[in-house]
Amino acid sequence: MSKIVSIEISHHRLPLDPPFKASWDGRPRQQFDATIVRVRDDEGREGIGSGDLMKGFEGHEDLFVGQDPRHLERHYEVLSHINFHYGRCWPLDLALWDLAGKVTGEPVWRMLGGRADRVRLYASSGVLRDPAAMADQAERYIAEGFPAMKVRFSSSAGGRNGWRDDVKALEAIRARVGDKLELMVDCNQGWRMPWDTTLPWTFKDALVVARELERLGIYWMEEPLHRSDRKGMKALKEATDIRIAGGEMTRELYEFRDIIEERAFDVIQPDVALVGGITGCRRLAFQAREAGVTFTPHSWTNGIGVLANAHLTAGAGDAPFLEYPYDAPEWSEERRDYPLVTPLRHENGWLLLGEAPGLGITLDEDRLKATRIG
Image (cartoon, rainbow, N blue to C red; front, top):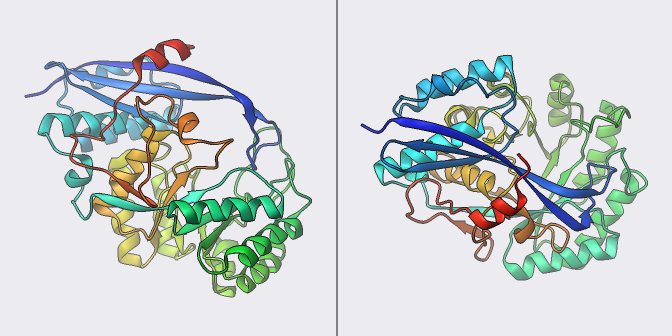
């Protein structure tokens, strides 16, 4: 029987020159941090995860050491208690699934149900470009084989001058590429950076924008209201033909349970690196399917997070698209995936997961050593 013998957490920082100007952040990002979690067993195997900072986990290693890594439901319960008292330590769940796959010799997508070994991707942009440049980027995505693209609206932190300018960018894309791409819109109203005290849209604000998005045939409207306003989201969902999406930063699985039961969203977007891990989000995938709600994870972390969300989506879900953070040159696959020996590469808009045991992660140990900050 495999037994856990150690858990190691390290923190890394990649300088970004030029900086990345994220649409949701008024401060250009000069660096990209990654937290790496390693779980080792008594036969020399290592499981790898990444995501949040693992704040509060130190001192709880003994709750896992000596246990069988394959006892994933047991570990999930312990992590859920740590999550309540401290920070989001779900990257450990990802590492445990990776290790369990290596123990059993199976890829995680097959362990989760084996529905598919690949996922269809949508290109998730992050930079606020002018309308012509957004249309150029849309053409590049089409050339690479992506079926869909997500466009960011300005947050109050900066960028374009309000939603009317954001709509102009959408109009430019539609004029250039027509219906060759499905278009999603992230309204950036669900949460704020700590220094941003501007209030989110009201229901009436969001409804006016939704009418514009209907005109442009937008596939979904993401986070058009504050994350706590489930009644407003449900009312907006019922008032428009556009799918309403959200939940990327939701902290508790029971909040998603309520969202699904209330049919408050058309699309839920949990991220296994931020809420519930693979073990918890697997529950949501089944609940959402039974309720007719689309399950398609948020995955704006690094390549390890993308892989973990992809394995769940392929193995247990049936999402039309999975988020693929990619907005070159500012947000390239090389920047996003710097902890990995080889950055993830899509193939004509698909991510193929293959037969490697676990999550299929190979770390770039030299790069991690050079970027380590803790």
